[in-house]
Image 1: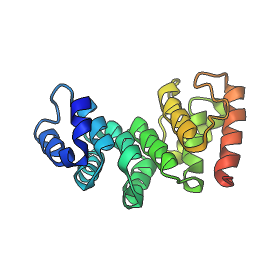
Image 2 (image 1 turned 60 degrees about the horizontal axis):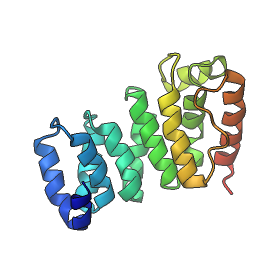
Image 3 (image 1 turned 180 degrees about the vertical axis):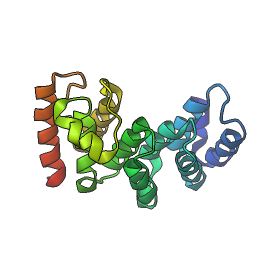
Image 4 (image 1 turned 120 degrees about the vertical axis):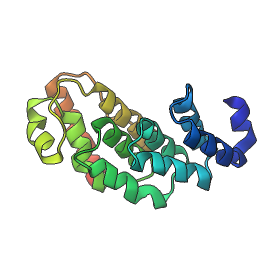
Length: 182
């Protein structure tokens, strides 16, 4: 992929066309991630299509927009993050990308819901946000952890597998930051 990256944004049109034709090909997920790093209009268009279609590459596409997204993609990312029927990992990926792109207050409930999902403190938020009740949310929390590190420079001490009380403490700190970013 380094050879493709060296070609720069000019390669995004060709790579996007190939991905459209061969979405299930080996390496398609890596190519989707590279498309985000290449950037350009063709990259953003395909990444948005993959998210909108809820393709098997939609989570990777959402994360790839972190590298090349603009405010133009905010409505799609926000709508997908809020979609109660969307895959919860895709919703977390959209929230992570929005955090990287500078969105804060609008994500408070979803970020808190994902951080507390699977815990007694998160049960009401799961129902309110349409998050499935399941015991493991470490990967989705990890996506948010990385986004916070990138966007804010801190993950607030988040341990994705921490005991419930610790998750609640960190969720409170993150929520306070998102409410009033400094």
